[in-house]
Length: 261
Ligand code: 5GP
Image 1 (cartoon, rainbow, N blue to C red):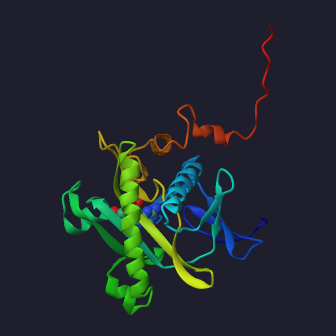
Image 2 (spheres, rainbow, N blue to C red; image 1 turned 45 degrees about the horizontal axis):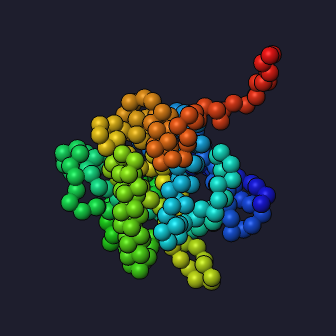
Image 3 (cartoon, protein in one colour; image 1 turned 180 degrees about the vertical axis):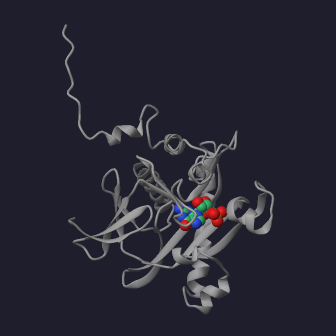
């Protein structure tokens, strides 16, 4: 598969064309941004961890029948993915109230929701991804009723699966953001899961201590973002206990000296 030209550069990822028009390459950058790009920095190694964690989650979701855009991980920072027409909506699902929900509605931070709650935001950086209702989606034809019904069902399944997966490794899944896209499967238009699922797009709290293991470490200046993402990867069994992501940043290999006997 030959890598072609850059098609699009977003805040955390770059998309490249390939020699196959149905496939593209998704490159995970180290850039961390928050508050609609007002706050930004580079955290070396973040892209590598998000690539691995997202690959792990999307592969597991495929195994339970949830179709998604991942074809395969190509290397430390790149994935081969299916080209989809992205639906311009960020689907947020919440199990515990925090973040913009608590600010917007004055709900106490950490309130466990009786049922998972889905919110829709228009994917538009210039407008700051505003919250929209389901009726807005139909009024402006961003998606139709059949598509939204299918997406909602899929979101609840993904949420149930991910709650269990994270709970098994001592992590509470607080909320997360998903994106979906349209593609053709056997000549039929289908909706599949797209983008990424990683600590950049989820809120993950340690089950015992409520320590934040996600992008809120950057948003709230808590520091130690890379160790937190590494911890998530280790608990999911992606990185071995001894692994250190800094190893991937080594550009020159130092020569190995043999010990004299
Ligand atoms: P909130 O609306 O509370 O800021 O975010 C809810 C959840 O969706 C959080 O897990 C957050 O990480 C995710 N989320 C919402 N919008 C975005 C976005 O534009 N980019 C990323 N990376 N995550 C988002």
